[in-house]
Amino acid sequence: MRRTRVIAAAVVWLAFCGFSAAQQNAAPAASQPDRETLEKELAERLTGARLTGYYMADGQEGPPKHDSYTLRKVEKRDGDKWLITAVLAYGQQSMALPLTIPIYWAGDTPVISVTNFNIMGMGSYTARVMLYKDHYAGTWSSATHGGYMWGKIEKIDEKATTRSTEPSKPKVSDKN
Image (cartoon, rainbow, N blue to C red):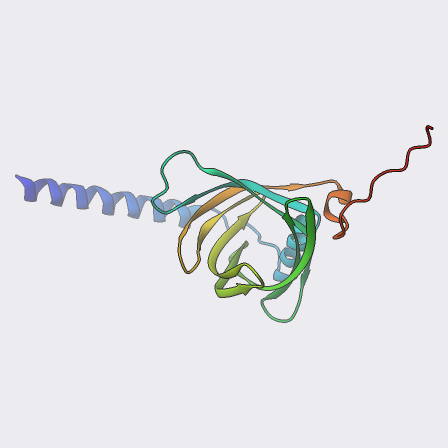
């Protein structure tokens, strides 16, 4: 009886896969922009953007934790390398940190792919993060833990990406 169920499930799965493949083959090919156009669009979409979403560590109990990354500038470099200037905030201070990161393409979808990537003062990370339209999703790990991340890519006010790395100075009031 169990064997019959397994065989029936396999037949249904194979039929579904064949039907799905037939539908995909019958659909007209969508025109995909060339790589240069895709890279230009990616640089424009990520420059002056904030990736805002959530992450969960493996084994974490409870709700996901809020996560946010501000990108000041994103520029294509040689090959698959991209220069990403990220704004990192520590308490009341922030600093722009230029990171050279490989981005590979799965068709029209960019994927950030780093393995044992060292970020000064923060440690070494491995990550695979897919960026599609205005969303991102991926996995990450460090020497001690790892997990999942996901969220939205949103353009932000340019002033938010150009904050000084120096502590803010008190405003001088003209009222005496």
